Length: 211
Image 1 (cartoon, rainbow, N blue to C red):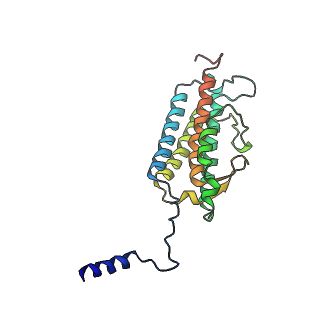
Image 2: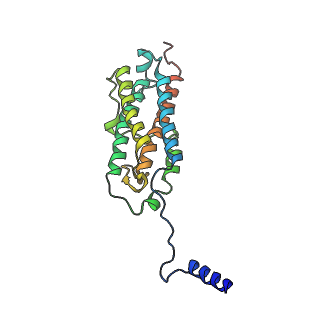
Image 3: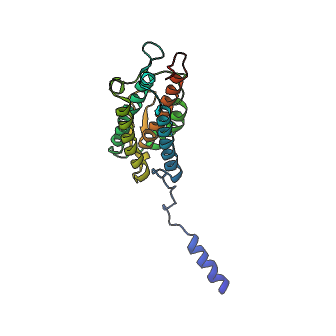
């Protein structure tokens, strides 16, 4: 009798009503703790690299061009600063969109693509007019504005609890296609890496002023 009772109880525990098969849980669209740590570290590291690279640059070094129509250290730093604002606006525009039910399939490979493509300077791209450096700002003005913009980006990355990945926005360049808000966020330090490399290349160019 005891054995029969146990078998009945076991059967009740295992029984699933018809049509109620368990569904796989959808992927969580929030940043994981590892992803948050990664983007925050990249933002801090690329900021330090830029500031270290420009700290002791003289006015002559700041404005020196390695070749006609090539950006100086100052112009490259100004472009980084301008792009920070534009890209953070893209993050905000993405999160303002309704959740995209197809976000996983539309953005599944984008992070890997961004991490490969953006730091690679073998392929050159023209910056949109809105973030073309004018070259009229002083070093102090550029770096102050950069630090202010980066502080805003960092605060968002450290504190947001928005499910970033389910909010998407089209990139104006078709090669990038649909990016989710996390892609747009990590785009910022990846873009910074690209142009930190450019600053290093300018400083290593023949003819770069010694002081």
